[in-house]
Image (cartoon, rainbow, N blue to C red; front, side):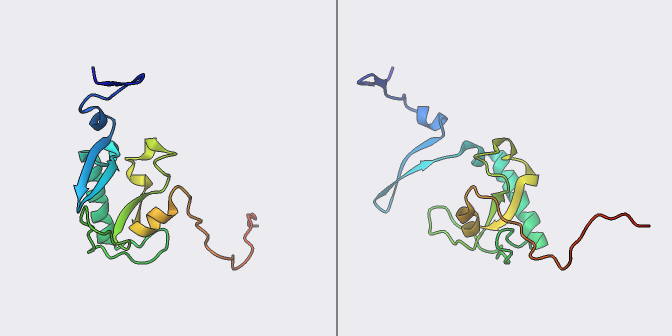
Length: 141
């Protein structure tokens, strides 16, 4: 058993890793606490992400949120300042509200990191603009 503090039992070593937490990291004198989403750090996600990035780059897919081109040559190294213009996969239906679609390739969209993070859980308004004329379903004679 772990040490007791009041009525709460302290977690045993390794419990936090199993729950998806990582011990604090020290970088440049700053302690960084990181919550790891275990589903987005495993091999299946890394494989899906890499193949999706390759498909997007080959098709030169623009950001589905702002419709601007994405520079696929930008790579954001871990632990360094992140470039918001870099490619990042976006989940059309957010992971928080649709966890069953987290690993579904059809739920992924190409986006800029900045656009994806600014969007959060909000759905993108896919407005095509004003109609050129009123369309109706009429049967032909």
